[in-house]
Length: 190
Image 1 (cartoon, one colour):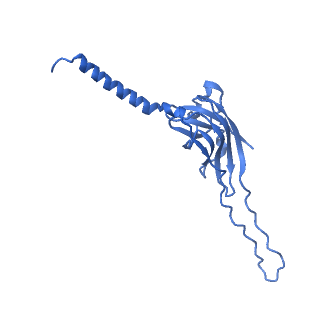
Image 2 (cartoon, helix red, strand yellow):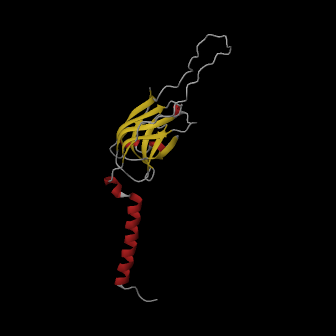
Image 3 (cartoon, rainbow, N blue to C red):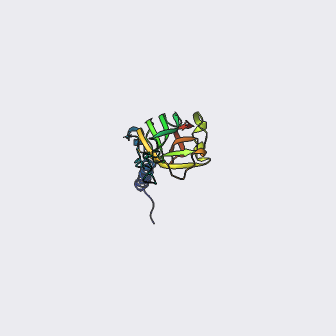
């Protein structure tokens, strides 16, 4: 083996630096901070079951058929407003019960920074102001609802049918890559 020349050393260092910079760009995705993804979904509407009419059991009965109870339209069962954590975040969050009895988490007027691997989390953690609130959402019980559809706008996230909502008190826009909350909202039952 021969001696390594300065030219070979610099070439090797340049290759290592290029790999590190490339990996850093893939990991941090800094361009995401300047790229907005706006999503404007309408309020979901579940198919309302057809109302059944009670049929008289006796042909001689003169009782008129009566409609059975039809579930009400979408109803807000909990709501809150976002506060900022790692990034400035504003907007509202609602948990809505649809006519078919299912629940949807709705983000309205969301405005936050874009970033790598952002998620919508339902959590039992308290919402805390400032740095104290940045990392608490993965300390206890949480449900990763989905990847954030966009960093701006109105969005819907269906909730699992077997989810007991009474155990969850907050929603976080969570950066799973860096384990930090971009913003969070305490949800209060209405």
